[in-house]
Image 1 (tube, rainbow, N blue to C red):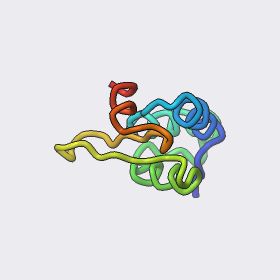
Image 2 (cartoon, helix red, strand yellow; image 1 turned 90 degrees about the vertical axis):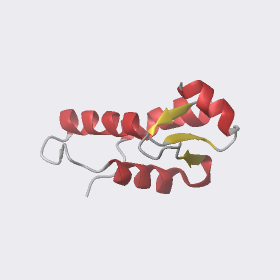
Image 3 (spheres, rainbow, N blue to C red; image 1 turned 120 degrees about the horizontal axis):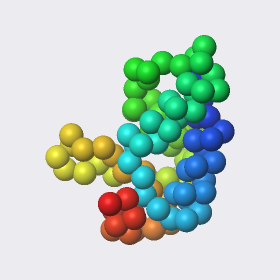
Image 4 (cartoon, rainbow, N blue to C red; image 1 turned 90 degrees about the horizontal axis):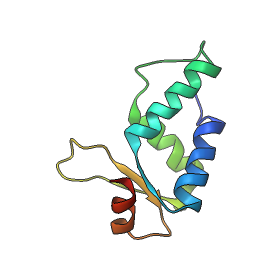
Length: 94
């Protein structure tokens, strides 16, 4: 079972919670997979579900993160610091 990599958690801590930015879940998943591919190749799974990465990050960070699903729901979800307004997160992500 893969856990959020140290690199993924550090990125979320610095970029999202401390600097109060938003990031697409798909981008966080890509970073997570890239890190695992290069540091844990035996555990790497290119088909690892984006929703699993989101679940692991939200479990790790708890109430410090919020997730917003734009409409239409075919777009990637946005993860942002719970200390900012959704509008600020959208502006920082786009």
